[in-house]
Image (cartoon, rainbow, N blue to C red; front, side):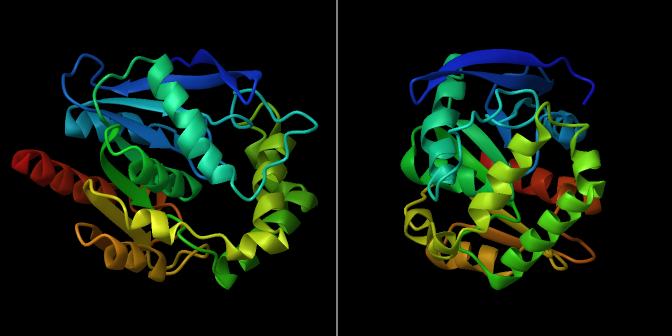
Length: 267
């Protein structure tokens, strides 16, 4: 991403944490800000130019940030292993502190990918006054065997060195980023993790998008959103894996633009 990274200092669980962030899109535009929430191994820089181009197309301002342990944000310390509620921590503790610290006074749109999609849904469920709408790509509502199999493969690729080398370009502490994500997903107790009850409470607009060839999740993830929250619009994209913003960029941008404009025209 070509934009300048900044840092916000917050207190999280009684510890000082520095959060990397960047503004993108139409920086002086009125109206809602779109906050981008990255995947389980993502960061500000791993989004590349997509958030900027997406927000330019929508004519809005965007915010991208790296969650603690990712990108240039503060890494996990020796005691900072994630627990089963790690996505809830990010949704209900870290995200509100970022929004408050950057003085985003109007309800925001959340654009979440993978783990970031789960965080977006949790935030919308618990903070209805904070969230104007949600766009989620390949979110996780529950744990599928397919997901676990792919995460095991990712661990093997990381240990072999190739994946670690690629990820090290985007994270100051790549082991902190990788093992924080990988270890918790492979814990036996995480198999029973689910946010379905919470998703059923969401009242704001939801656009849920899934790639048909996603190795980390099936269409049942987004179809379940529709069953739980009738206002949700579900889109399946063919010839697309886990990252629609990379695999089918123009298709995704068109879908989001049409949805965003319809929702805001009604409001």
